Amino acid sequence: MSDEPYPEEILESIENYNIDINNFIPGHGKGAKLLLNFNKISGLEEIEGVILKGREIENGIVADIIIKEGSVIEDPVHLCFGVNKQSGIQQIFPRIIAEDNTEVTIRAHCSFPNADGLIHKMFGHFYIGNNCKFTYNETHYHGEKSGALVAPVSYMYIGENSIYENNFNLTQGTPGKVKILLDIYAMKNSVIRSNVKAFGKGIGDSIRIRDSVFLEGENARSVIKMKAAAKDGGEVLMYGITEGNSPRCNGHVECQEIVLGKGSTCRARPFIRAIDPTSTVSHEASLGRFPQKWLDELQAKGLSEEEATDILIEAMLKED
Amino acid sequence: MSEKKNIEGKYSNYRFNAKINIEEIQPWFDFDRGKPWDEREVPWPLENKVRREILITLANEGPKSFKELLNYIRFAPKPLLIQKEEYEPHVRFQWSEQVLENHLLNLEWYNLIRKRDNKYEITFPVLNIETLNSLDKYITLFAEYWINIIKETKEKVQAEFSDINKDNNSLYQILLDKTVDKLYTMLKKERLLPQEANIKALWAEQLRKIKFEEWVKDNF
Image (cartoon, rainbow over all chains, first blue to last red):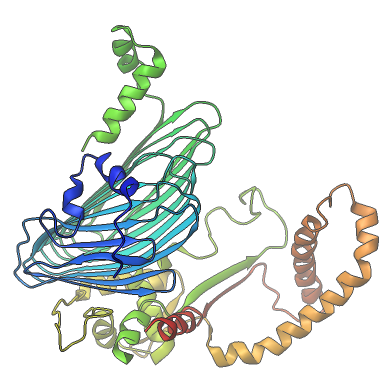
């Protein structure tokens, strides 16, 4: 484990998402934590009910996180994957197992403030047992040069009667090239809520997110909400999949994307499929500009169209 | 270690491929790919891991009955680093009969599996490492012939098509694609390929398993 102080600019990027940085630093704040500085583990702190283990490998780490059976963890588990170098490769292989009857919130932050040719990859597996309440919040900051290539892939299995909430936020800084693949398998009576927010701000920004929920158990329910904006040449593709494979399951995909400035592109691909005759799956998507009435109302208060649009985007990306 | 490999490999063993070769562009084909708009190279049923797992099981273990498959698709995840002596998790995932039936009907509809004598079996070839090695000598032989021809004609091609081949390589992708199309047409005329309008070949390649095992060897 490294003794070097944790880079301040990474901590600052956490603060920009209104998150208390103390909770991420070992020896401070509450909750279990795992800090990664490029490819070195710079902090690891366990608490009662949470087992954390990490191993450094070439270009990254492998990590296990186990929430012990019946544990209700009040303070979030903090994971920080930071790189303050301009370039390099960071690869993370986390495996999270939340045993039956557990409650926990994981707060992950991926920060690459100086990225200019930096590659971050993740291949994660989440296994959530029965009767759990599991929340996974992930925030990203990729600097201001559109210089990161970020490609996380996660497979998540959600047990019977469990509630899983996934919140992904990439709205600060310039994202660079982002390719996210998330597959969630929902078992009997489970409830899935997946919220994705992203903002591409320039010609070097391309955000492509595939968020899939496979309803594999009777009465499983899900809602995928994808909200994004592309500005000044940015590109966003939101690919929301919901499959109704089980009796009486119910899923919905919702996508809202705003396109601003010339050369920007927004695309949405809601794919919904039903192979069980008692399943229900639906989708809705809207792309383009905000309704004129909303803009008129703000412009009547003295704002320009651009200022009004900025306010509406901020509100859209903050909305739950 | 072997247990870890099995758990991980269970869902990462195979890459599925499908290729459709067409004889002429038709109005309902995508403009960009020149292929039917409704038939992607990897069919959507393979996006679901449970269905992939069924195919992998049938490819690895041979024909299986419904009850046997139900047993095969359940699993209990294990940690990557934490040893059994330190802590052993008890999370289990089990699919119901009705959901498995839905998946099997879906795979049957897309002709990826078939039911025979009350057992399910896959309908396409699986290239394991031995088969891939045996095929390799022919693949190399075919490629070497092509290399010789490319070398022989390089200057002539460049002189004739310099205006569309400014970077000296973009033309070759077009040439190779068009050559494969032509090759299929000529092979059919020679009666060396089946006389089907479209030849659709789906196969699974045992590639990821090998890559994953190499990764485990390097990192554990």
